[in-house]
Image (tube, rainbow, N blue to C red; front, side):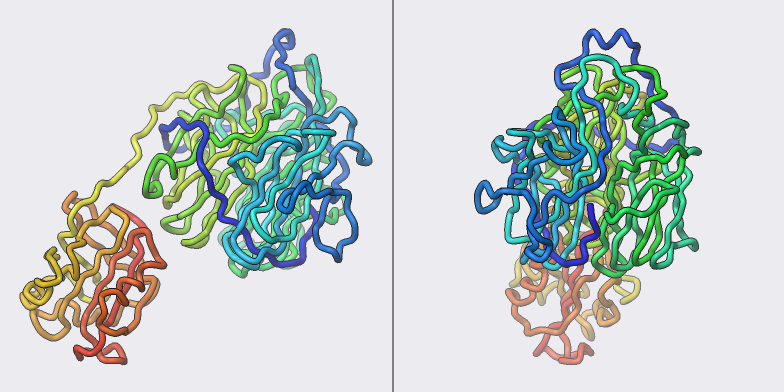
Length: 575
Protein backbone atom coordinates (compact mmCIF):
# COMPACT_ATOMS: atom_id res chain seq x y z
CA UNK A 1 0.00 0.00 0.00
CA UNK A 2 1.25 3.44 -0.85
CA UNK A 3 2.13 5.93 1.84
CA UNK A 4 -1.07 7.67 2.89
CA UNK A 5 -0.45 11.17 4.19
CA UNK A 6 -3.97 11.86 5.47
CA UNK A 7 -6.12 11.33 8.45
CA UNK A 8 -9.32 9.38 8.82
CA UNK A 9 -11.59 7.64 11.31
CA UNK A 10 -12.41 4.01 11.55
CA UNK A 11 -15.05 1.48 12.40
CA UNK A 12 -16.31 -0.60 15.13
CA UNK A 13 -16.86 -3.68 12.98
CA UNK A 14 -19.43 -5.88 14.36
CA UNK A 15 -22.07 -8.43 13.55
CA UNK A 16 -22.86 -12.00 14.36
CA UNK A 17 -20.92 -15.17 14.14
CA UNK A 18 -20.94 -18.05 11.82
CA UNK A 19 -19.27 -21.12 13.13
CA UNK A 20 -17.58 -21.30 16.48
CA UNK A 21 -15.55 -23.78 18.40
CA UNK A 22 -13.63 -22.98 21.47
CA UNK A 23 -10.96 -24.28 23.75
CA UNK A 24 -7.54 -22.87 24.41
CA UNK A 25 -4.05 -23.22 25.55
CA UNK A 26 -0.92 -21.47 26.53
CA UNK A 27 2.76 -22.16 27.14
CA UNK A 28 6.07 -21.08 25.66
CA UNK A 29 8.49 -22.44 23.11
CA UNK A 30 11.38 -21.29 21.03
CA UNK A 31 11.52 -24.28 18.67
CA UNK A 32 12.16 -23.32 15.06
CA UNK A 33 10.93 -26.02 12.70
CA UNK A 34 9.25 -26.37 9.35
CA UNK A 35 6.40 -28.78 8.69
CA UNK A 36 7.33 -31.70 6.44
CA UNK A 37 6.53 -31.14 2.78
CA UNK A 38 3.97 -33.36 1.13
CA UNK A 39 4.97 -36.09 -1.27
CA UNK A 40 4.60 -35.34 -5.01
CA UNK A 41 2.09 -38.18 -5.03
CA UNK A 42 -0.28 -35.90 -3.17
CA UNK A 43 -0.88 -34.06 -6.43
CA UNK A 44 -3.32 -36.81 -7.41
CA UNK A 45 -5.70 -35.53 -4.77
CA UNK A 46 -5.13 -31.84 -5.45
CA UNK A 47 -8.30 -29.95 -4.45
CA UNK A 48 -10.08 -27.78 -6.97
CA UNK A 49 -9.06 -24.15 -6.59
CA UNK A 50 -5.48 -24.88 -5.54
CA UNK A 51 -3.25 -21.96 -6.49
CA UNK A 52 0.28 -20.64 -6.30
CA UNK A 53 1.46 -17.13 -5.43
CA UNK A 54 2.75 -14.68 -8.03
CA UNK A 55 4.25 -11.37 -6.93
CA UNK A 56 3.37 -8.31 -8.99
CA UNK A 57 4.73 -4.81 -9.11
CA UNK A 58 2.92 -2.94 -6.33
CA UNK A 59 0.26 -0.72 -7.84
CA UNK A 60 -2.62 1.42 -6.62
CA UNK A 61 -5.94 0.05 -7.84
CA UNK A 62 -8.33 2.48 -6.12
CA UNK A 63 -8.25 5.78 -4.26
CA UNK A 64 -11.44 7.66 -3.46
CA UNK A 65 -9.73 10.99 -2.79
CA UNK A 66 -10.52 13.36 -5.69
CA UNK A 67 -7.06 14.89 -5.37
CA UNK A 68 -5.45 11.58 -6.33
CA UNK A 69 -6.88 11.44 -9.83
CA UNK A 70 -9.11 8.88 -11.51
CA UNK A 71 -8.97 5.17 -10.77
CA UNK A 72 -10.82 2.35 -12.45
CA UNK A 73 -13.29 1.36 -9.75
CA UNK A 74 -17.06 1.51 -10.06
CA UNK A 75 -19.72 2.07 -7.42
CA UNK A 76 -22.11 -0.86 -7.04
CA UNK A 77 -24.18 1.16 -4.58
CA UNK A 78 -23.63 4.03 -2.17
CA UNK A 79 -21.53 1.86 0.17
CA UNK A 80 -19.86 -0.70 -2.11
CA UNK A 81 -17.17 -0.18 -4.74
CA UNK A 82 -16.02 -2.77 -7.28
CA UNK A 83 -12.34 -2.98 -8.21
CA UNK A 84 -11.04 -4.94 -11.19
CA UNK A 85 -7.90 -7.02 -10.50
CA UNK A 86 -7.41 -9.01 -13.69
CA UNK A 87 -6.70 -7.03 -16.82
CA UNK A 88 -4.12 -4.86 -15.10
CA UNK A 89 -0.49 -4.71 -16.17
CA UNK A 90 1.44 -7.71 -14.86
CA UNK A 91 -1.64 -9.53 -13.53
CA UNK A 92 -2.21 -13.00 -15.04
CA UNK A 93 -5.64 -13.31 -16.66
CA UNK A 94 -6.32 -16.57 -14.81
CA UNK A 95 -5.72 -15.12 -11.32
CA UNK A 96 -8.29 -16.40 -8.81
CA UNK A 97 -7.30 -14.50 -5.65
CA UNK A 98 -5.45 -11.32 -4.74
CA UNK A 99 -3.42 -9.93 -1.87
CA UNK A 100 -4.22 -6.26 -1.28
CA UNK A 101 -3.43 -3.54 1.21
CA UNK A 102 -6.46 -1.49 2.21
CA UNK A 103 -6.20 1.87 3.95
CA UNK A 104 -8.91 3.95 5.59
CA UNK A 105 -8.01 7.60 5.12
CA UNK A 106 -10.61 9.83 6.65
CA UNK A 107 -13.94 8.89 8.07
CA UNK A 108 -16.12 11.11 10.15
CA UNK A 109 -16.72 8.50 12.85
CA UNK A 110 -16.01 4.92 13.82
CA UNK A 111 -16.34 2.54 10.92
CA UNK A 112 -14.97 -0.49 9.09
CA UNK A 113 -14.26 -1.95 5.68
CA UNK A 114 -15.11 -5.41 4.37
CA UNK A 115 -13.39 -6.82 1.26
CA UNK A 116 -15.03 -9.80 -0.46
CA UNK A 117 -15.46 -11.51 -3.88
CA UNK A 118 -17.40 -9.31 -6.27
CA UNK A 119 -20.97 -10.32 -6.98
CA UNK A 120 -21.41 -12.19 -3.69
CA UNK A 121 -23.53 -11.21 -0.71
CA UNK A 122 -21.88 -8.97 1.89
CA UNK A 123 -20.39 -11.30 4.55
CA UNK A 124 -20.52 -10.71 8.31
CA UNK A 125 -16.77 -10.05 8.44
CA UNK A 126 -14.41 -7.07 8.37
CA UNK A 127 -10.84 -6.24 7.32
CA UNK A 128 -9.96 -2.74 8.54
CA UNK A 129 -11.35 -0.96 11.60
CA UNK A 130 -11.28 2.67 12.67
CA UNK A 131 -11.95 3.23 16.36
CA UNK A 132 -12.21 7.02 16.24
CA UNK A 133 -12.42 9.95 13.83
CA UNK A 134 -9.16 11.10 12.31
CA UNK A 135 -7.44 7.75 11.90
CA UNK A 136 -5.18 6.48 9.13
CA UNK A 137 -5.21 2.68 9.36
CA UNK A 138 -4.12 0.02 6.88
CA UNK A 139 -4.34 -3.76 6.72
CA UNK A 140 -3.44 -6.51 4.29
CA UNK A 141 -6.12 -8.88 3.00
CA UNK A 142 -6.35 -12.09 1.00
CA UNK A 143 -9.50 -12.00 -1.13
CA UNK A 144 -10.94 -14.43 -3.63
CA UNK A 145 -11.77 -12.87 -7.00
CA UNK A 146 -15.40 -12.81 -8.00
CA UNK A 147 -17.32 -11.67 -11.06
CA UNK A 148 -15.02 -10.67 -13.95
CA UNK A 149 -11.90 -11.03 -11.80
CA UNK A 150 -12.92 -8.26 -9.41
CA UNK A 151 -13.30 -7.65 -5.69
CA UNK A 152 -15.94 -5.63 -3.82
CA UNK A 153 -15.20 -3.27 -0.95
CA UNK A 154 -17.90 -2.20 1.51
CA UNK A 155 -17.57 0.97 3.61
CA UNK A 156 -19.69 1.16 6.75
CA UNK A 157 -19.73 4.96 6.69
CA UNK A 158 -18.27 8.04 5.09
CA UNK A 159 -14.52 7.57 4.61
CA UNK A 160 -11.85 7.71 1.95
CA UNK A 161 -10.06 4.51 1.05
CA UNK A 162 -6.98 3.45 -0.93
CA UNK A 163 -6.40 -0.08 -2.24
CA UNK A 164 -3.02 -1.38 -3.44
CA UNK A 165 -2.27 -4.68 -5.13
CA UNK A 166 0.52 -6.77 -3.59
CA UNK A 167 0.26 -10.10 -5.44
CA UNK A 168 -2.11 -12.68 -6.88
CA UNK A 169 -2.68 -16.43 -6.89
CA UNK A 170 -3.05 -18.44 -10.09
CA UNK A 171 -4.63 -21.91 -10.32
CA UNK A 172 -2.55 -25.08 -10.70
CA UNK A 173 -3.54 -28.69 -11.32
CA UNK A 174 -0.33 -30.41 -10.27
CA UNK A 175 2.64 -30.04 -7.94
CA UNK A 176 4.75 -26.93 -8.53
CA UNK A 177 8.07 -25.53 -7.37
CA UNK A 178 7.56 -21.83 -6.72
CA UNK A 179 4.93 -19.77 -4.97
CA UNK A 180 4.08 -22.28 -2.22
CA UNK A 181 3.90 -21.01 1.36
CA UNK A 182 5.98 -22.81 3.98
CA UNK A 183 5.15 -21.91 7.59
CA UNK A 184 7.15 -22.49 10.74
CA UNK A 185 5.62 -25.52 12.41
CA UNK A 186 5.65 -24.00 15.91
CA UNK A 187 4.22 -20.66 14.82
CA UNK A 188 5.83 -17.32 14.08
CA UNK A 189 9.26 -16.62 15.56
CA UNK A 190 10.63 -13.25 16.63
CA UNK A 191 13.79 -12.34 14.74
CA UNK A 192 14.28 -8.70 15.72
CA UNK A 193 13.35 -6.46 18.66
CA UNK A 194 14.91 -3.00 18.91
CA UNK A 195 13.85 -2.48 22.52
CA UNK A 196 15.01 -1.08 24.85
CA UNK A 197 17.72 1.11 23.33
CA UNK A 198 18.05 0.56 19.58
CA UNK A 199 15.02 2.35 18.12
CA UNK A 200 14.98 3.53 14.53
CA UNK A 201 15.33 7.26 14.04
CA UNK A 202 13.17 9.23 11.65
CA UNK A 203 13.86 8.59 7.96
CA UNK A 204 16.08 5.55 8.60
CA UNK A 205 16.26 2.02 7.21
CA UNK A 206 17.29 -1.13 9.04
CA UNK A 207 18.30 -4.51 7.57
CA UNK A 208 16.72 -7.54 9.26
CA UNK A 209 18.35 -10.96 9.00
CA UNK A 210 15.69 -13.69 8.78
CA UNK A 211 18.07 -16.63 8.48
CA UNK A 212 18.33 -17.37 12.25
CA UNK A 213 14.60 -18.10 12.37
CA UNK A 214 14.89 -20.74 9.66
CA UNK A 215 14.47 -18.88 6.37
CA UNK A 216 16.21 -21.04 3.73
CA UNK A 217 18.19 -19.89 0.73
CA UNK A 218 16.25 -19.75 -2.51
CA UNK A 219 12.96 -18.51 -1.03
CA UNK A 220 11.16 -16.03 -3.27
CA UNK A 221 9.43 -14.00 -0.55
CA UNK A 222 9.20 -13.78 3.24
CA UNK A 223 5.97 -13.62 5.23
CA UNK A 224 6.59 -11.38 8.24
CA UNK A 225 4.71 -9.50 10.90
CA UNK A 226 6.02 -5.95 11.40
CA UNK A 227 5.21 -4.09 14.63
CA UNK A 228 6.01 -0.43 15.24
CA UNK A 229 6.21 0.21 18.99
CA UNK A 230 5.79 3.62 20.69
CA UNK A 231 6.30 5.11 17.25
CA UNK A 232 5.96 8.60 15.84
CA UNK A 233 3.44 9.57 13.15
CA UNK A 234 4.43 8.45 9.70
CA UNK A 235 4.71 5.22 7.76
CA UNK A 236 6.82 2.07 7.80
CA UNK A 237 7.77 0.10 4.69
CA UNK A 238 9.19 -3.44 4.47
CA UNK A 239 10.94 -4.04 1.13
CA UNK A 240 13.60 -6.25 -0.51
CA UNK A 241 17.16 -5.62 0.64
CA UNK A 242 19.42 -4.26 -2.05
CA UNK A 243 16.63 -2.46 -3.92
CA UNK A 244 15.29 1.05 -3.90
CA UNK A 245 12.48 1.64 -1.44
CA UNK A 246 9.13 1.54 -3.28
CA UNK A 247 6.52 4.26 -2.88
CA UNK A 248 4.31 2.05 -0.72
CA UNK A 249 3.94 1.41 3.00
CA UNK A 250 3.38 -1.58 5.25
CA UNK A 251 1.70 0.26 8.14
CA UNK A 252 0.77 3.80 9.15
CA UNK A 253 1.15 5.55 12.51
CA UNK A 254 -1.17 8.50 13.15
CA UNK A 255 -0.61 9.25 16.86
CA UNK A 256 2.54 9.87 18.90
CA UNK A 257 3.48 6.80 20.94
CA UNK A 258 1.25 4.46 18.98
CA UNK A 259 1.90 0.71 18.64
CA UNK A 260 0.55 -1.04 15.52
CA UNK A 261 1.26 -4.28 13.69
CA UNK A 262 0.87 -5.35 10.07
CA UNK A 263 1.61 -8.53 8.19
CA UNK A 264 3.54 -8.26 4.92
CA UNK A 265 4.77 -10.42 2.05
CA UNK A 266 8.23 -9.13 1.15
CA UNK A 267 10.01 -10.36 -2.03
CA UNK A 268 13.57 -11.52 -1.42
CA UNK A 269 16.35 -10.25 -3.61
CA UNK A 270 18.43 -13.45 -3.60
CA UNK A 271 19.32 -12.95 0.07
CA UNK A 272 17.79 -13.87 3.42
CA UNK A 273 17.33 -10.33 4.66
CA UNK A 274 14.71 -7.63 4.28
CA UNK A 275 14.86 -3.87 4.83
CA UNK A 276 12.44 -1.84 6.95
CA UNK A 277 12.12 1.93 6.58
CA UNK A 278 10.64 4.24 9.24
CA UNK A 279 9.58 7.73 8.22
CA UNK A 280 8.81 8.87 11.77
CA UNK A 281 10.87 6.45 13.83
CA UNK A 282 10.21 4.21 16.80
CA UNK A 283 10.95 0.71 18.02
CA UNK A 284 10.62 -2.20 15.60
CA UNK A 285 9.61 -5.83 16.09
CA UNK A 286 9.84 -8.38 13.26
CA UNK A 287 8.38 -11.90 13.44
CA UNK A 288 9.00 -14.47 10.71
CA UNK A 289 5.84 -16.45 9.88
CA UNK A 290 7.09 -18.34 6.81
CA UNK A 291 8.20 -17.96 3.20
CA UNK A 292 7.18 -18.63 -0.38
CA UNK A 293 9.26 -21.14 -2.31
CA UNK A 294 11.37 -20.20 -5.32
CA UNK A 295 12.00 -21.86 -8.68
CA UNK A 296 14.75 -24.06 -7.21
CA UNK A 297 12.43 -25.85 -4.80
CA UNK A 298 11.20 -29.37 -5.45
CA UNK A 299 7.78 -29.67 -7.08
CA UNK A 300 5.27 -30.21 -4.25
CA UNK A 301 1.68 -29.48 -3.33
CA UNK A 302 2.42 -28.42 0.23
CA UNK A 303 1.78 -24.68 0.52
CA UNK A 304 -0.70 -24.24 -2.34
CA UNK A 305 -3.50 -21.81 -1.51
CA UNK A 306 -7.25 -22.53 -1.43
CA UNK A 307 -9.11 -19.18 -1.45
CA UNK A 308 -12.61 -18.80 -0.04
CA UNK A 309 -15.20 -16.14 0.63
CA UNK A 310 -14.54 -14.73 4.13
CA UNK A 311 -16.17 -16.58 7.02
CA UNK A 312 -16.41 -15.64 10.69
CA UNK A 313 -15.02 -18.60 12.64
CA UNK A 314 -14.56 -17.14 16.13
CA UNK A 315 -16.24 -14.28 17.95
CA UNK A 316 -15.89 -14.38 21.73
CA UNK A 317 -18.68 -11.81 22.01
CA UNK A 318 -21.04 -14.69 21.16
CA UNK A 319 -19.48 -16.88 23.85
CA UNK A 320 -19.15 -14.48 26.77
CA UNK A 321 -20.99 -11.41 27.99
CA UNK A 322 -17.72 -10.03 29.31
CA UNK A 323 -14.52 -10.01 27.28
CA UNK A 324 -12.08 -12.84 28.07
CA UNK A 325 -9.67 -12.00 30.88
CA UNK A 326 -5.94 -11.59 30.52
CA UNK A 327 -4.21 -14.95 30.06
CA UNK A 328 -7.14 -16.47 28.16
CA UNK A 329 -6.63 -18.62 25.05
CA UNK A 330 -9.38 -19.65 22.66
CA UNK A 331 -9.04 -22.41 20.11
CA UNK A 332 -11.25 -22.70 17.04
CA UNK A 333 -11.50 -24.79 13.91
CA UNK A 334 -10.62 -22.86 10.76
CA UNK A 335 -13.27 -24.41 8.50
CA UNK A 336 -10.95 -25.98 5.93
CA UNK A 337 -12.79 -28.08 3.32
CA UNK A 338 -9.90 -30.58 3.21
CA UNK A 339 -8.08 -32.54 5.91
CA UNK A 340 -4.63 -31.55 4.64
CA UNK A 341 -4.71 -27.85 5.52
CA UNK A 342 -1.56 -26.71 7.33
CA UNK A 343 -2.24 -22.98 7.68
CA UNK A 344 -5.13 -20.55 7.53
CA UNK A 345 -5.49 -16.99 6.27
CA UNK A 346 -7.34 -14.87 8.81
CA UNK A 347 -8.24 -11.35 9.71
CA UNK A 348 -7.93 -10.93 13.47
CA UNK A 349 -9.77 -8.19 15.32
CA UNK A 350 -9.60 -7.20 18.98
CA UNK A 351 -12.24 -5.08 20.67
CA UNK A 352 -13.44 -4.06 24.15
CA UNK A 353 -10.00 -4.55 25.77
CA UNK A 354 -9.55 -4.61 29.53
CA UNK A 355 -6.12 -3.04 29.29
CA UNK A 356 -3.21 -2.44 26.95
CA UNK A 357 -1.72 -5.67 25.66
CA UNK A 358 -1.33 -8.02 22.71
CA UNK A 359 -2.84 -11.04 20.97
CA UNK A 360 -0.85 -13.99 19.58
CA UNK A 361 -2.17 -16.42 16.97
CA UNK A 362 -0.54 -19.85 16.82
CA UNK A 363 -1.23 -23.58 16.22
CA UNK A 364 -3.72 -24.93 18.77
CA UNK A 365 -2.23 -27.41 21.21
CA UNK A 366 1.38 -26.31 20.73
CA UNK A 367 3.49 -24.02 22.87
CA UNK A 368 2.78 -20.32 22.42
CA UNK A 369 5.61 -18.66 20.47
CA UNK A 370 7.36 -15.42 21.41
CA UNK A 371 5.52 -13.35 18.82
CA UNK A 372 2.41 -11.22 18.52
CA UNK A 373 -0.22 -10.35 15.92
CA UNK A 374 -2.31 -7.58 17.48
CA UNK A 375 -1.31 -4.75 19.80
CA UNK A 376 -3.81 -2.83 21.91
CA UNK A 377 -2.87 0.61 23.22
CA UNK A 378 -6.19 2.05 24.40
CA UNK A 379 -9.24 1.05 26.44
CA UNK A 380 -11.77 1.86 23.72
CA UNK A 381 -9.77 0.47 20.82
CA UNK A 382 -10.90 -1.80 18.02
CA UNK A 383 -7.94 -2.96 15.94
CA UNK A 384 -7.42 -5.57 13.21
CA UNK A 385 -4.48 -7.29 11.55
CA UNK A 386 -4.09 -9.82 8.77
CA UNK A 387 -2.66 -13.11 9.99
CA UNK A 388 -1.54 -16.27 8.26
CA UNK A 389 -1.01 -18.84 10.98
CA UNK A 390 -0.11 -22.49 11.05
CA UNK A 391 -2.79 -24.86 12.42
CA UNK A 392 -2.97 -28.27 14.04
CA UNK A 393 -5.70 -30.86 13.81
CA UNK A 394 -7.38 -28.83 16.60
CA UNK A 395 -7.20 -25.65 14.56
CA UNK A 396 -5.77 -22.30 15.60
CA UNK A 397 -5.44 -20.57 18.96
CA UNK A 398 -5.66 -16.91 20.02
CA UNK A 399 -4.02 -15.79 23.26
CA UNK A 400 -4.70 -12.43 24.94
CA UNK A 401 -2.29 -11.33 27.62
CA UNK A 402 -4.41 -8.45 28.98
CA UNK A 403 -7.92 -9.52 27.98
CA UNK A 404 -10.31 -8.45 25.20
CA UNK A 405 -12.90 -9.84 22.80
CA UNK A 406 -11.28 -11.65 19.86
CA UNK A 407 -12.72 -12.19 16.37
CA UNK A 408 -11.25 -14.33 13.57
CA UNK A 409 -12.46 -14.20 9.95
CA UNK A 410 -11.01 -16.89 7.68
CA UNK A 411 -10.43 -16.24 3.94
CA UNK A 412 -8.61 -19.41 2.82
CA UNK A 413 -6.14 -22.17 3.67
CA UNK A 414 -2.74 -23.50 2.62
CA UNK A 415 -2.31 -27.19 1.87
CA UNK A 416 0.03 -29.34 3.91
CA UNK A 417 0.15 -31.65 6.89
CA UNK A 418 -1.31 -29.96 9.97
CA UNK A 419 0.78 -30.24 13.10
CA UNK A 420 -0.27 -32.61 15.88
CA UNK A 421 -1.30 -30.93 19.16
CA UNK A 422 0.69 -32.00 22.21
CA UNK A 423 -0.85 -29.90 24.98
CA UNK A 424 -4.27 -30.13 26.57
CA UNK A 425 -6.75 -27.37 25.93
CA UNK A 426 -6.86 -24.98 28.91
CA UNK A 427 -9.88 -23.88 30.82
CA UNK A 428 -10.42 -20.14 30.56
CA UNK A 429 -11.39 -18.19 33.68
CA UNK A 430 -15.01 -17.08 33.66
CA UNK A 431 -15.89 -15.31 36.87
CA UNK A 432 -19.43 -15.17 38.24
CA UNK A 433 -21.09 -12.31 40.16
CA UNK A 434 -20.11 -12.19 43.82
CA UNK A 435 -20.25 -9.70 46.67
CA UNK A 436 -17.67 -7.00 47.32
CA UNK A 437 -16.15 -7.63 50.77
CA UNK A 438 -13.28 -5.16 51.13
CA UNK A 439 -11.76 -2.17 49.32
CA UNK A 440 -8.06 -1.33 49.33
CA UNK A 441 -6.13 1.65 47.97
CA UNK A 442 -2.70 1.87 49.57
CA UNK A 443 -1.88 5.27 48.08
CA UNK A 444 -4.96 6.74 49.80
CA UNK A 445 -4.56 4.70 53.03
CA UNK A 446 -7.82 2.86 52.33
CA UNK A 447 -8.28 -0.65 53.70
CA UNK A 448 -11.82 -1.16 54.89
CA UNK A 449 -14.63 -3.66 54.79
CA UNK A 450 -17.62 -3.17 52.50
CA UNK A 451 -21.21 -3.38 53.68
CA UNK A 452 -23.86 -3.87 51.04
CA UNK A 453 -27.26 -2.35 51.65
CA UNK A 454 -29.93 -0.14 50.20
CA UNK A 455 -29.37 3.62 50.10
CA UNK A 456 -31.52 4.04 53.22
CA UNK A 457 -28.77 2.32 55.24
CA UNK A 458 -25.94 4.31 53.66
CA UNK A 459 -25.32 6.53 56.70
CA UNK A 460 -25.84 3.66 59.13
CA UNK A 461 -22.89 1.68 57.78
CA UNK A 462 -20.74 4.67 56.86
CA UNK A 463 -21.04 6.03 60.41
CA UNK A 464 -19.62 2.73 61.66
CA UNK A 465 -16.47 3.00 59.56
CA UNK A 466 -17.43 0.83 56.60
CA UNK A 467 -17.41 1.53 52.87
CA UNK A 468 -21.16 1.43 52.30
CA UNK A 469 -22.76 0.71 48.96
CA UNK A 470 -24.76 3.66 47.72
CA UNK A 471 -27.33 1.28 46.27
CA UNK A 472 -27.99 -2.43 46.48
CA UNK A 473 -25.37 -3.03 43.80
CA UNK A 474 -22.39 -4.71 45.45
CA UNK A 475 -21.52 -7.38 42.88
CA UNK A 476 -18.16 -7.64 41.17
CA UNK A 477 -17.43 -9.70 38.02
CA UNK A 478 -20.67 -8.59 36.43
CA UNK A 479 -21.52 -5.68 34.13
CA UNK A 480 -22.33 -2.58 36.14
CA UNK A 481 -20.98 -0.15 38.67
CA UNK A 482 -20.09 -0.65 42.34
CA UNK A 483 -20.54 2.67 44.19
CA UNK A 484 -18.92 2.82 47.65
CA UNK A 485 -19.37 5.69 50.09
CA UNK A 486 -17.14 6.38 53.08
CA UNK A 487 -16.57 9.23 55.52
CA UNK A 488 -13.51 11.49 55.53
CA UNK A 489 -13.58 12.86 59.08
CA UNK A 490 -16.00 10.67 61.03
CA UNK A 491 -16.69 6.96 61.46
CA UNK A 492 -12.92 6.20 61.47
CA UNK A 493 -12.62 8.30 58.26
CA UNK A 494 -11.83 5.40 55.89
CA UNK A 495 -11.92 7.67 52.81
CA UNK A 496 -10.10 10.62 54.40
CA UNK A 497 -7.34 10.65 51.77
CA UNK A 498 -9.03 9.46 48.58
CA UNK A 499 -8.14 12.86 47.12
CA UNK A 500 -4.64 11.39 46.70
CA UNK A 501 -5.93 9.05 44.00
CA UNK A 502 -5.48 10.41 40.48
CA UNK A 503 -6.09 9.14 36.97
CA UNK A 504 -3.74 6.23 36.36
CA UNK A 505 -3.61 5.10 39.99
CA UNK A 506 -5.33 1.91 41.08
CA UNK A 507 -7.44 0.42 43.85
CA UNK A 508 -8.85 -3.05 44.42
CA UNK A 509 -11.94 -4.80 45.74
CA UNK A 510 -11.89 -8.24 47.37
CA UNK A 511 -14.77 -10.43 46.17
CA UNK A 512 -16.55 -13.14 48.11
CA UNK A 513 -15.05 -15.63 45.63
CA UNK A 514 -11.62 -14.94 47.17
CA UNK A 515 -10.33 -13.10 44.09
CA UNK A 516 -9.12 -9.52 43.99
CA UNK A 517 -10.59 -7.21 41.36
CA UNK A 518 -8.25 -4.43 40.27
CA UNK A 519 -9.49 -1.05 39.04
CA UNK A 520 -7.51 1.69 37.35
CA UNK A 521 -8.62 5.26 38.07
CA UNK A 522 -10.03 6.82 34.91
CA UNK A 523 -11.76 9.87 36.39
CA UNK A 524 -11.44 11.95 39.57
CA UNK A 525 -13.61 14.98 40.23
CA UNK A 526 -15.84 16.89 42.64
CA UNK A 527 -19.53 16.94 41.79
CA UNK A 528 -22.95 17.55 43.32
CA UNK A 529 -24.33 14.87 45.69
CA UNK A 530 -26.69 13.32 43.15
CA UNK A 531 -26.72 9.55 42.73
CA UNK A 532 -27.60 9.79 39.03
CA UNK A 533 -24.88 12.38 38.41
CA UNK A 534 -22.23 10.25 40.10
CA UNK A 535 -23.38 7.07 38.38
CA UNK A 536 -23.25 8.92 35.06
CA UNK A 537 -19.52 9.52 35.52
CA UNK A 538 -18.94 5.77 35.30
CA UNK A 539 -21.17 5.16 32.28
CA UNK A 540 -18.49 6.10 29.75
CA UNK A 541 -15.92 3.74 31.22
CA UNK A 542 -17.81 0.43 31.38
CA UNK A 543 -18.70 -2.30 31.26
CA UNK A 544 -17.36 -2.90 34.82
CA UNK A 545 -16.52 0.01 37.07
CA UNK A 546 -16.26 0.96 40.75
CA UNK A 547 -16.48 4.35 42.44
CA UNK A 548 -15.17 5.65 45.76
CA UNK A 549 -17.33 8.54 46.97
CA UNK A 550 -16.95 10.88 49.95
CA UNK A 551 -18.08 14.31 51.10
CA UNK A 552 -15.88 17.12 49.87
CA UNK A 553 -15.28 20.80 49.52
CA UNK A 554 -15.24 22.19 46.03
CA UNK A 555 -11.43 22.01 45.93
CA UNK A 556 -11.49 18.30 46.83
CA UNK A 557 -10.38 18.70 50.43
CA UNK A 558 -12.33 17.47 53.45
CA UNK A 559 -15.00 18.21 54.29
CA UNK A 560 -18.40 19.55 53.33
CA UNK A 561 -21.69 17.82 52.69
CA UNK A 562 -22.43 20.14 49.77
CA UNK A 563 -20.23 18.25 47.29
CA UNK A 564 -18.94 14.75 46.64
CA UNK A 565 -15.42 13.71 45.63
CA UNK A 566 -15.77 10.83 43.16
CA UNK A 567 -12.96 8.47 42.17
CA UNK A 568 -14.04 6.28 39.22
CA UNK A 569 -12.09 3.13 38.36
CA UNK A 570 -12.30 0.71 35.44
CA UNK A 571 -11.74 -3.02 36.02
CA UNK A 572 -8.58 -4.18 34.26
CA UNK A 573 -7.42 -7.36 36.01
CA UNK A 574 -8.40 -10.14 38.40
CA UNK A 575 -5.94 -12.03 40.62
